[in-house]
Image (cartoon, rainbow, N blue to C red; front, side, top):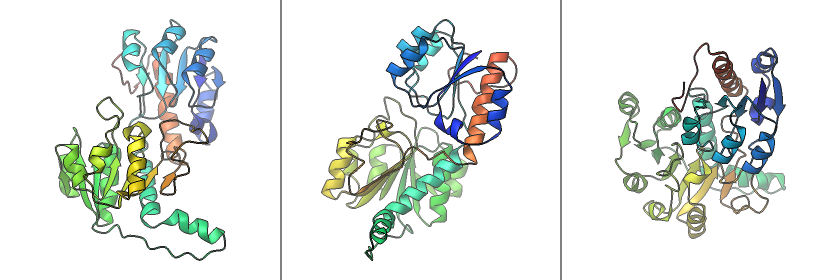
Length: 320
C-alpha cells in the first residue's frame, strides 16, 4: 500500500500513532500540508492507495487523476470543506474523519484568544519586551454577551467555559442540545441577525458550507454594539475579510482574533497579519500534546480498518 501523509501535526507530535503506522509495512510519502491543488496533482502521478490528509485541496481534478487506484481518504480532523465530497461519493471513495477528539482543545484556544483580545495581552507583552511600561486598560468577561454560531461539540465546550466566566451565552444553530442549553442557560436565536444584535462577542463554530460562507459580514457586524470582538477558530472563509477589516478600522470591532485564514499558510502581505487590532495564530487550535495523538490514532485506525475491511470507521460520505 502506498499512502500520502500530509498533516504536519500528525508528523511533528510524538505519540503511539508513529509506531502503529510503521507496523503496517506501508510505503508512506510524507509532505508538509496543507497542499495546493497544483501540488496534489503533481503528487497524483505517483499513484496512491490512500490519503491521510489535513486541509489539502482534494478537488474533482485531483480525484479523477488519482482514480482508479485511490481506495480511501482519511481526514485528520473534522473539517471536510477542502474535499470534493460529492465527487468522492460518485467515485465510491470513502472519506473518513475524526469527530469527538479535539473539542476541548479548540474551546480552550478560543478562550485563550478571547482573553488575549479583551485583556490587551499582545500589545502589553510587546511593550514590556521593548522596555516600556505601557499599562493598557482591558475588559472583564463577566456579564459580557457571547454569541456562538453552532452548538456542536466545540460550541458546547465554549458555552460551558463562557458560563464559568459568568458570561451571558447566546447561540444559533440547526443542532440544538436542549440539555446543554438548559444547564448553561444558553439563549436560543432562530436567525443570525438576532444573534449578532444580542452579542458583544461573536465566535463561529460551524462547518463551512455555501450557507455559512461569509456569514460574518458588514450587515451583521453593524447590528453589534461598538467596540465588540470577534474570535474565529472555525474556518477563515466564515468571515468576509474586507468587511471585518472595515469594522476594525471604524471602531465597530475592538479586535479580531483568529486561528484560521482564507489562505494557509498566508502570503507575507496578507492584510490580517499586520493589522494592529488583529491577533493571528497559525491554525494551532487543535494542536496539543493531548489532542494530536487522539486525532492521529483515530485517523490511522479509520484508515487501517477501511483498508482491511474490518473494524469501525467514521465515514463522512456514506460510502462505507
